[in-house]
Image (cartoon, rainbow, N blue to C red; front, side, top):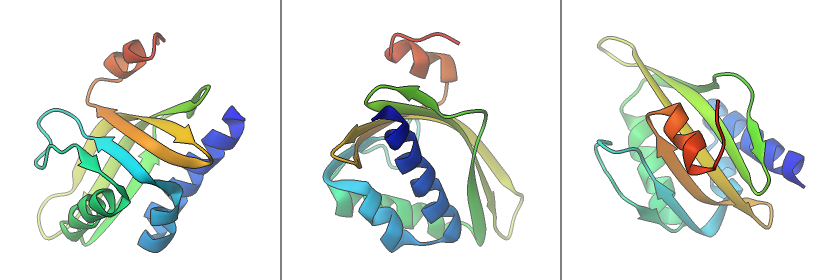
Length: 131
């Protein structure tokens, strides 16, 4: 089942990068909770699919174009998937490159919880894993 979870996160990446916010919405459980890294402009947590999608849509408005690119392999951790990201955004000013790690918890084929960390090692430690 955990490889299925990796595929769900890959599908979410594809939806984001295609700009398909309706498709992305379907990847999240209706009761999803998202916690963003410390210092994020809107700290959350965001509870429920509509609150999460509102946050993602506000994030997208900042950029003329943006992509999420995984750094390395997605880590299969049972009912969780760990991904180190680079989020690249281009707008009227300089390009932006944000690096963070997201830990996704899956339930019934959807993302039910996401917690993000600036420090990859900290994210792994939270799962009892090491680099």
